[in-house]
Length: 218
Image 1 (cartoon, rainbow, N blue to C red):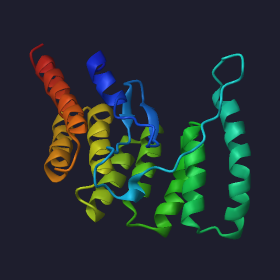
Image 2: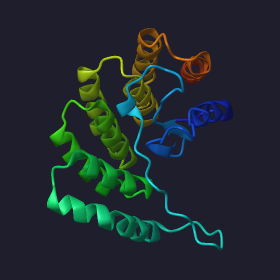
Image 3: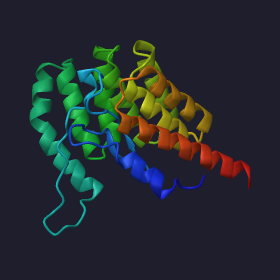
Image 4: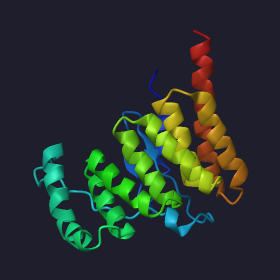
């Protein structure tokens, strides 16, 4: 499948905000953000992602390797894991560790802790969305979609879950129809969405439609 246009990439990246921890800074090689929360919208406070401290690159400016990021994540997670050992079903601690490992691109470990957190709170839509993001970054698009659909079973109009579902359907499954359906529902069921955020979703939808039309015309 052809790469999205530069305008699509910019539209996705603008969904990031300093007030929101995005589940992933980049969505695979597409540059589209996973995770969505519009400032001023009436979305559940629980949907705001717990901030994971990203490992800082060495002073030389060289990007750390995955092994180095894992080492830094292990060090950061150690005190939380010590607490978790005493309280293994503590949802907040499980989510915190998951966030640390996800931020360090250790997605398998992140998914493991998010999965444990989901088992303690099956109806928590925000945690399922985090698990879905880690699964997707592992290359498990089908499992990620399943988690988002389960999340939407508890909260059918959750904007984060609907946005992420659209992104994964489009980029992970090349299913434009399902992506558009998710975003259409997002816009229809979240009338409180600020105009800027609404326009960004509409731009993504327009790009998907244009991409589909272009592919069918070849």
